[in-house]
Image (cartoon, rainbow, N blue to C red; front, side):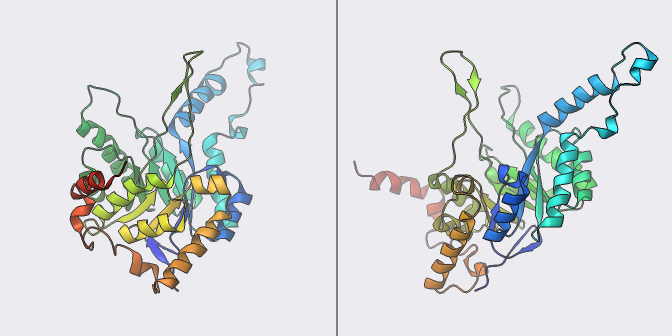
Length: 330
């Protein structure tokens, strides 16, 4: 059985790719993912806020500090010996590339161009096979239009496309007024693929301190339906790679994504919950299902139940809404 697929121009052994998570920070867990069958690995994200804060601290304490005495100034730390988060990230890319045999996809989390061009160039030089732009932007300003928000993503892509040649994939949220139009715009400006969808984590509120608190809840299979729908709508209407992410926990989840049109399926919560070795279980279950249903390759699956190939194409859009309500039983 041929489980191979193509993603961002990369030939992968199968469609299961761990997405950005703490599992990629450790070489041992990264190797376990590869041993379990991961066909590529998306690294943990380098965050814009962390890099900016660290750069400001470096400027304050290492570059702009003046003790007031020439001899004492000589005891300031050497900046070349200080390892920044960017330095650590680039070194880890190099380590993973030299330790694993699968493609390594770096991840930048932010939305402004700022210093991302320099970081993207360094990431390419460190040996990353591709770069995922995890554009995490909450449109909270009532004075900013939807078009202005979209332009943030477009400008970031355009600027990076000028300076790096490795494949670029944009990880999007589902909150655009027209997801299809946004993906089409990104394609026109040189993106190689999109990952649907970025999962925004919602803050909580501590009722005793009234502080906003970080809340982490792992995804469920139910959440995969939103991605499945949009992958199915986009397949055949764009000419770039489609990655499905969010809520993929079982072989059934992954198979639905592939049949809707995804080239790869990104796993995160399922691996955090069950460990790196769980990927092998999902892969084995997929292969067993394909054998039972007489599929000989993943390429036969991809897009076979998308909107353009569906028995009832309207079910991907509004038509299915009425059926859901009618069929519900109290």
